[in-house]
Image (cartoon, rainbow, N blue to C red; front, side):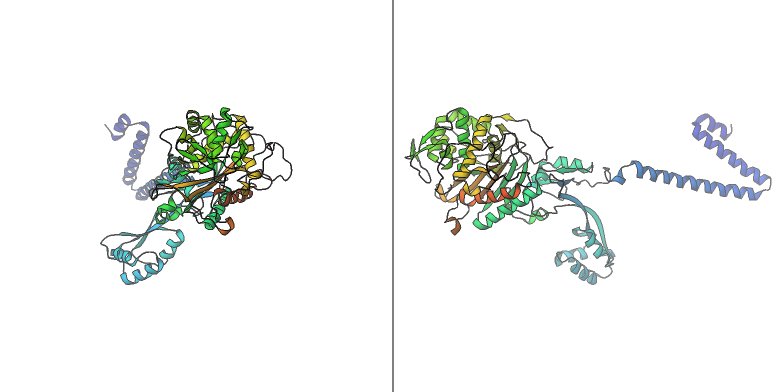
Length: 586
């Protein structure tokens, strides 16, 4: 049987056609030689060579075209081209860049290919001043190709490449960069060289950032860089003035729980996170817990109103210290009078607040604290969110202490979350570092009535217009708030030390208008500040934190679409007339 017959019987049509064509071609060669037409034989062979070359190049062209059009690599979104440590860009709520992966290069030295070690060493030492002489010597004397320096930009790589040094080579590497350096460093966090998040949003949203990188996507955080910049500036100025060991600033939307600004002082540069101290890397807003002092009186008053134990017309006898069991509760500046509920708040009266809390009782107060999220770590994406230190037993002593912020340590994030129901109509919303769509309202549990929330907005506004929070006022912006000064427990003397304080101001603006209106919570906290001649030596919340809060609110209001309104406002709090508090703002 002929070769053509075998091909016809045993192979598919395509191969049968090719085999038959080759068979005819071979017979054409034989016929050309038999007929003495040698030139035909040469032409046929040249044609065959050209045909095979043409088919080969055609196949290559088709493969290249398919790769360019259909593989996805050309668009930068294919999984194949990305390094395993790739992470998506992080941006603020308006799309401003906060973190990105950029192409950098690692420099390698192969001593076997170096022609002149002395001149190479001299050139590299001049081009790489941050590389130690010992490291450079080890690389040049090594018996194999050695990594010398990493994180080189294309410009740096080009400059060294132009030196024309034999034995010097480069390899591409992905590097995470933070173009704004210290800005929002504790919220953004940082990642390692292997592409794993280690802190902040980089850690909290690690898997999502890795997945988005393969889709050429970006991740938008809730912060607004304009708000963040003003917050950091005011916090830094307060820290430089009063010299605290640390400070915290927070701005949040009361309805969505979005964190629009978060600052912890001191801060650090995430580009060189390993060089920063542990103290600088500590996110005090999430990881540290403090006795928040009189800011807790806002919770106690709200609970008293919500349970019906107190009304706006209730009065409390603060003429003498309040004796409860073995302890006596006094006011920082005794008013020695019967105080209305609003005056208790304005005077920041420990006596009046403790009497109200005892009336609420341990069972109800502890249940409300649970509902407000004060007894658990703040619900937020940040892994650093710390658990609180709470009383082991909820008795009258614990109730009296916690009512004005003693005997319980919580994080600033937990305080922020618990404050939101007092200001948003009574709903406990989770905090979030993700940007939410306009008009977003999360599912939330009701923990206070709308009436209680409305009353708290009125009381907090009254505290700024005629109470301990006067220095936080920003004309035309209807600011409300509560001062806080918590004395720190000193283990050396085994008691509270009045010279070591946590001074804060918890604010809300605007307090006027319907409950559903956009409204913002602001917290400024200074850990162990020092008084100045301008504060008459005082370092309490009303003196050191309230002014910074008012200045911050005045700066960020335009960014948030809040306009100043000079003159009578609609929905202004209508409270009984109360005297201006002249005592030191605690």
